[in-house]
Image (cartoon, rainbow, N blue to C red; front, side, top):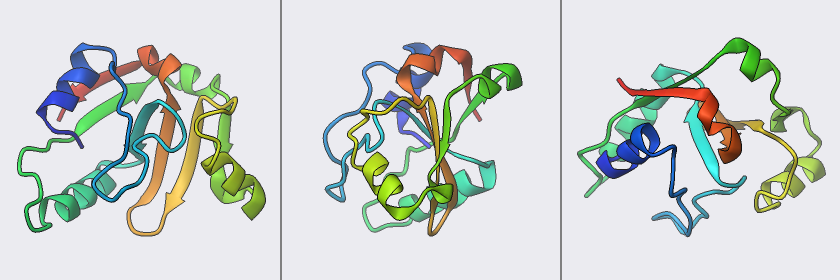
Length: 131
């Protein structure tokens, strides 16, 4: 789910420049490092879009971007699943500021389901489209 400028950045500019700084909640925009953060399913993305758009003063120009990667390319990534880690390991990874060896990290969110992080150096493996 992206606004027009970020959608263009993801579709037409290889993701560059990657977001930095903090979001409107004061949280870092790239907690696991520079790269793509995406919901696992379209339904999750739609629920998140509805939640964000329905906030008072929330954005009205957001759209869902689909990201696809070949199965073989996905299988060759270095993966981590934070839900299978003990608390200390998951906390260390979350607080690593992107200093880790993973290409893909899955984490479970309390409200919307699984979120996936993909390191910016593998972004070229994706086909990205507005949906």
